Image (cartoon, rainbow, N blue to C red; front, top):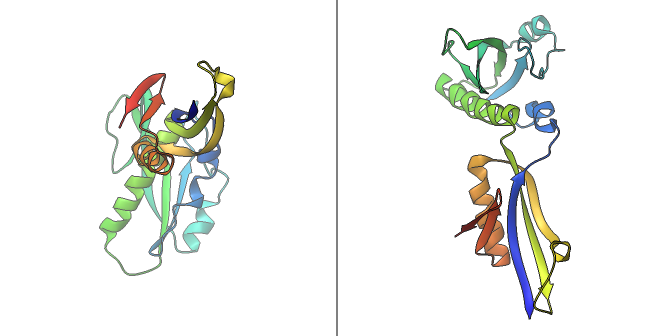
Length: 183
């Protein structure tokens, strides 16, 4: 009968590695940036073993990092957003490498904090491409074979990943949370 491909989107079982490895991808040509989360009860700390005084002696400046915890957690810089559900969670340390507009730092940090918010809330997905060769009129779930995929996608990246895999493998339907998505 032929070969059929499908794409499935699942929550990524990353086991905290995105949080643990968060400092890996956030340095740019303009800045070195370190996120420290050391003041959140009931949540995993991040880089709380770093010596802030030594980093400041090396030229790092500090921006306060706040979190709002109300069902989910949301990180931001600037000031507390809610007097009851938010407070200081840590700090953002940064060192300029070039003379650039400080708004660029704001953009980079806000983008990183959006990703960190997703990681802390578990809003991280894997995209799997599977194929099945059907020679009879029926097949089982065990007949599907994984042929490609990736993990660590945040919600806004899932659609691009699905579209890329769909173009490569000629898939026109994907499943997310057991619901079908056609594109």
